[in-house]
Image (cartoon, rainbow, N blue to C red):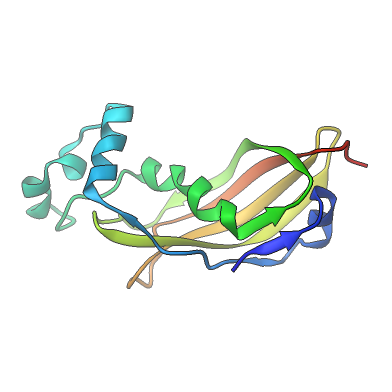
Amino acid sequence: MSLHLDSPAALTDAVGSTLGPGDWFTIDQRRIEAFADATDDHQWIHVDVERAAAGPFGAPIAHGFLTLSLLTALASPLLEVDGVAMGVNYGFEKVRFLQPVQAGSRVRAVGTIASAEVTGSGVRVVQDLTIEIDGSERPALVAQWVTLLVPSTPAR
């Protein structure tokens, strides 16, 4: 479920709004291996399928940073804002990896708009996000993601 706003400035009135849940997204072994190649993190718990199956997680697991990096794909569709020239990652107030994501698992994002502040550059919005794992009561991660939405026309 997506929240649609007519302008970045409308975010200030949307604080507290629920975002999602989004669509399920499968993190497969191919994606995990591609991420390992991109980051030079080839730890066996991620890329050695046979050894990982006998390891502490019972299967290869996605890198925590892979799951975090998927926030753009998972959370961006949950909030549609018209009149945005560009969105810029501003950072994170908090990130916690709560449970590993086994290869082949499906994940999705849910969250809320925690705050929105009009600045000279645009609207800085903080989203409290959770990445859920299909079939698990415990989420993969929680994060407070800060982005700057730069309006097509100057913020007022």
